[in-house]
Image (cartoon, rainbow, N blue to C red; front, side, top):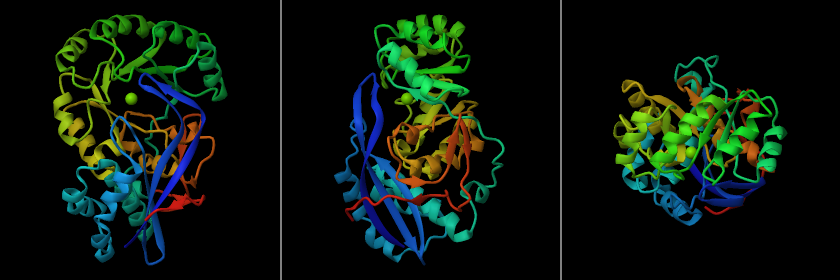
Length: 344
Ligand code: MG
């Protein structure tokens, strides 16, 4: 396989704000793997919270270029395991490579990835559309830009969180889920769960900072709403740690290192009778198409990342009012449409 690396700047439709800060342009690294004229694509975005930069991702991937040159792709999971020693410290880089390997694997075999996994594409939950923190009337306007979705995910962690949800509720009957991105205390979470439940909120994502396990225990016992781990559940070993502290986990491909570990985390969560969600970053259709392959395995999904961009760089899956439509292409269905800056 031949490895190529491209850097893209993805301008966002709106400045995107969560409890930790704001961005207006998202830097992203695209990995291309080529074998016999077929090309597979994967993506990882830069992320300050998780320490992922273009430079450290490129460095990690360059360290395995020679190995990839010699490799003929038969099984992406086998490749993931073989490269784990070299890439384990940089799950974002490993994720982009693993996504590209899956896309190429499906294209080589003339099948979509979900079919090669034996999944039924009819069993796919709808995705939410995410509303970043802003003035309340702007949040209402953002929701109305994407009307008639079945589910909206509302970013919270402000001094007036309940007011935000109340105001949004005036304009839709859709299901809400909320994500405090570590912005609440245990007390606040328990109190908010009581007030949010009658407002049609189905769960709370990551209310407390990632390492507040004792406080989470109290929340788990007393919350009126299920709580889903995001920042507290990064890699496979975290799934068992979250048992008894959270009702479910939000897997992100960049956090854990790609589709291969994501599937293992899903299996483990199921064995513990926990709910499973997959989330995304603000990222292009390259990554979103990879996430889509997992849909039949999930309870909840948040794969609206490409819709938050002012312009996309690829074609693949499309999303219409929360419903994901698969591409006619094989693999993950990705076709790169824009020219990035080649950096490796
Ligand atoms: Mg989250």
